[in-house]
Length: 129
Image (cartoon, rainbow, N blue to C red; front, side, top):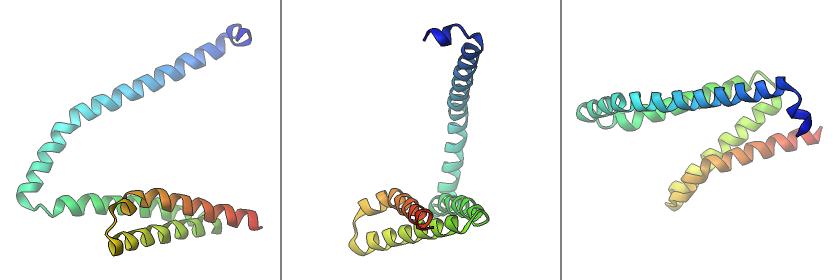
């Protein structure tokens, strides 16, 4: 601890990091405080016009986000492609199993399972070389 105490630059870096994290957290809370009532108004308006939009719009947004992030991986290497396809296959299998067995926990754990499968595929591809 004495080595850090004698170096003012490290203390300034630690203070700057603490300030950045604190400001980021505060801005996140202020944003949530301001945007929550606005989003509730939109939720109420969508509920009155077409309730099925409440299910379609978030699902479409999530699919678009995951596909966009996933397709960016295709340009990196073949390992990324196989990891993405393995994770997507695991997700599809989890959804199929969940619907076939009517087990809700499979749906809830499907994202974690697909991440582990994608990591396992990437690991085995990189160690097979």
